Length: 341
Image (cartoon, rainbow, N blue to C red; front, top):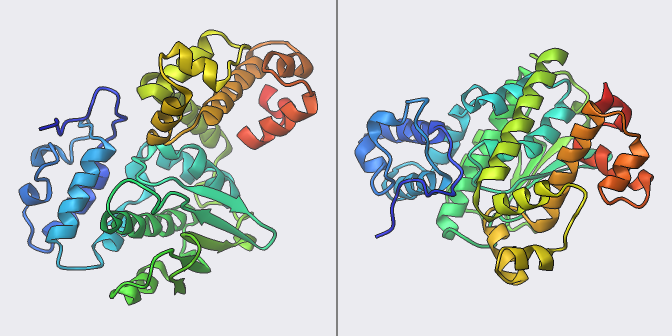
């Protein structure tokens, strides 16, 4: 039988999500030991800030919740209790950012610090912004577990935006790619917006008029310091985890040289198809890692050297400096001059 403890190459997190779910199930009369059965998590340690658990262990607890819970509202109640203050640096970075637009953008950028169970994307349009969950039902866990995770994830987004804005800020609508469940009325009750099922994909919509609003705890210096800390934490995670960590380290060892996927796969003694599959299982891609390395190097060069923007663009493999500036804006939301301070 495989170990239920975090594996050597698994990302690990404080067990705040497990603690919240166990608390909600406890209110339904379910003992912590039953909630945690088969997860390898000790009931005495779920409120220990020094304890570390994996997403895989959290999913084991969610499976137990699906079997044991007497309430279809369980994932929504759990999501409503997962305030940003439970998320450490990630949560404080989002609460101190300077606009709700920054909140949405940084929520994606730093998402891997938040015990992620689903991939999230944020896209801004002229009249609205949309959270999208592109892999919600593509692969992996059972449909029942995916639905449970998605219900909780949607509720977390509603809760977190309220934490940041300092007031209720409900979505304009929520869309789900599966048929309406028997408890469909619970969705609109907790999310505070119209909910539509059998839609092309899972989405959470917001009116773009809120994006310029200032969070209640916005603070320039605090935001800068916390975002720099999150950048370092993201970098540490990339350099130490799984195949994605090996690829990241390979690229960082020879800055300025960016091998293609075939060459990288050969260096790791696997086929490019295997490499692609392994990276997908870790929630990333070769292109995304190359972008991350380029972003890290660009930021470092701009902040610590006197090199010209054109020289940095060339070092990072951009034949056109204008393309580098556009990429930098996409990665960081800032231009070269702003990053130089």
